[in-house]
Amino acid sequence: MLKNNKKNFFLNFLIVVAIFVFDRISKLYILNLAEIDKLVDIYFNPFLNFHLIWNTGVGFGLFSSTENYFYNLITGIIILINIIIIFMILKSKDYKVYFLLMILGGSLGNLFDRLYYFAVPDFIDLHYNEFHWFVFNVADIFITIGVLCLIFAEIFLNKDRIKNDQI
Image (cartoon, rainbow, N blue to C red):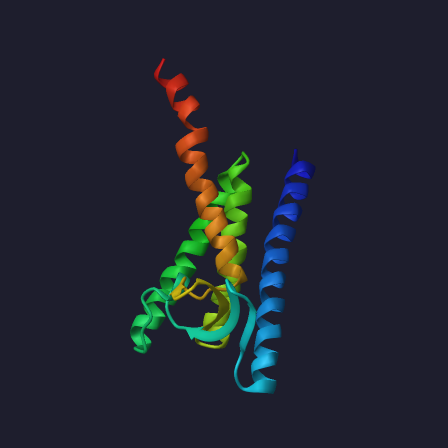
């Protein structure tokens, strides 16, 4: 049993580290381009650009603020949420642990940037004609996929379990 727990812990740790490293590499690449060209504005196709912005808020630029106390409060809340996610991962025994690992890996990537740069570099700009989605980064992708999968699992996959519990 202990050997199995070590194996699961190691696998979970590798997943989080892989997501973190993938996010860091993508951000470092964009930041290196910005250092060379002073501006990152790369056109890929009519739907995708890379355009570097610095986000002081949470996901997709929500709650952005230039006030230090508000920034520090948000950062503290993010740290607390990461601790809660770690406890949820440790208690989880099913497939949902992988969704939580995706959220944690992405969140740690953005938390690193908040602590190191005092802002998160966002650079992926999806758009159609004049409509632009929020500019985001690789960590945001993992966080969003993890949250959407958790919601999907709770709504659709647990429906049968809830029905069985009521019988």
